[in-house]
Structures are given as C-alpha cells and as structure tokens.
Amino acid sequence: MQDYHEFLDKIIISESVLQQRIAELGKEISRDYQDHNLHLICVLRGGVLFLADLMRQISVNHTIDFMAISSYGVGERQSTGQVRITLDLQEDIHDRDVLLVEDIVDSGFTIASVLEFLSTRHPRSLRVCALLDKVERREIAVPIHYRGFAIPNKFVFGFGLDIDEYYRNLPFIGAVNLDHYHPT
Ligand code: IMP
Ligand code: MG
Image (cartoon, rainbow, N blue to C red; front, top):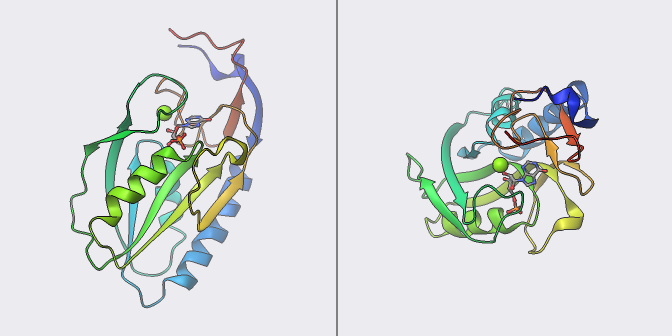
C-alpha cells in the first residue's frame, strides 16, 4: 500500500478549514431544525467522518441511522446512475425530518436515487447536506440544502473519501495525482 505522500497532488481543504465549515453547517442546521424531529441519515461508507463531526456541532436533539448502497459497475471512479441498496435503514422514517448526510455529490446520480428511495417512505421533510460538491460534473439536478464546499473537477481523497477503499482516515481532503498512484 502506497504512502499517500507519493500521489498527493495537493491538500485542497485542510483539517482546520474543514472543521470550521462543519461547525458553521452545524449551527445553521441547529437553527433550522429547532422544534423538528431531526433524523440524520448517513450513506456509508464515505459519509461517516462527516457525520461524526457534524453531529457534534448540532445542538438540537436528533437521531441517526445508516444505509449503504453500491453503484452498478463497482470499482470505477465514476458512478453509473443506478444504485442498489445493500444495507437498509434500521428505523422507519415516516413523519421524521430527514437530513441526508453525504460526503460528495459528483454526477448526482447517487443522491438522486437515494432521495427517490427515501421519499417513497414518506418522511415529513427530506433535505440534503453534502460536504463536497463537484459542480462541473453534475449530470442530474439535485437539491443540496447545506453544502460544505464547491470543489474543482479532480479526484479527491481523505475525510471519508477513498481511493480503492483506503485513505479514508486522513483528516483533510487531498487531490490525487493519478500518474503517481499505483493500484495494488
Ligand atoms: P455520483 O453518483 O456521481 O454523484 O457519485 C457520488 C459517489 O461517488 C460518492 O458518494 C463517492 O463515493 C464517489 N466519488 C465521487 N467523486 C469522488 C472523489 O473525488 N473521490 C472519492 N470518491 C468519489
Ligand atoms: Mg468510493
């Protein structure tokens, strides 16, 4: 397994900038969801670090749940537009104020499918909080109510985001130099 320094092009969002923005998002969400039945749903696996830090910045009472999906055509760095639910929610979301917590919106296909899936279960409200938004890559319009950062069209890793399942633990968001990355 390569040391990430070998293929890190540059750190595009540092740990302190990430944490500062997450604190702002937490405040905004806390303000908007006073007197609501806030239920955060995290899409595994990329969203876990964001969820863990975000929820510590949310001051209103809330609950959490997890789901996992896989894109058809796994292993690629692009999604195909169709997703399969591989882990369903533990709890019913009927009548709850659901906030979907996502790591990154790229083409938008993943979020669009997840939103469609969740809306069939009739939550009271349904919104999206995405840490990163690769605006230029969007192929399907999706509503992002809370957005951490707009980022350029580069493959990024760290803070939950993987390259072939590794490097999720890094506390910053880095861009990859694919010429220097060698899959094992
Ligand atoms: P979309 O369906 O194209 O919006 O893809 C979203 C999913 O692709 C995310 O949840 C990530 O798992 C993955 N993804 C997209 N861009 C990146 C990236 O730059 N680094 C790591 N994973 C990414
Ligand atoms: Mg991935």
